[in-house]
Every structure is written in structure tokens, then in C-alpha cells.
Image (cartoon, rainbow, N blue to C red; front, side, top):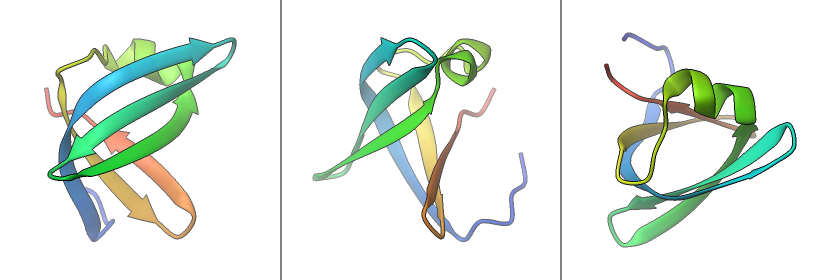
Length: 69
């Protein structure tokens, strides 16, 4: 997958909490911890699970996650 975002941080999903339409995805990035709020539908479509390797992409005030398949 090719993306234009330059701020890409590889990490591992530590926790996923779904509440209605939204999900909170906690990602461990080295010694750091990042939380992304994404749609529950996106979590389902990506098949995200605890332990998955993901890349957090930060663009302005948004945080997006990508999972290589």
C-alpha cells in the first residue's frame, strides 16, 4: 500500500474497545502509546485484532491506521 502521509509510526495493537459506531484502538509504538479513534466498521473491515502490526499515519489532526495484508 502506498500513501502520501510522511508521519508513519509502526506499532502493535494492544487493545480495541468498541462502543456503538466508534472504536478506540490502542497502539504500542516502541516505548510510546498512541490511541486512535476510528469507526467500528473500519476495525471490522481491516480485521484488526490485538497483536496485529499496524502503521499509524498522522496527517494534521487526524490519525489513520493501515494494516498490510
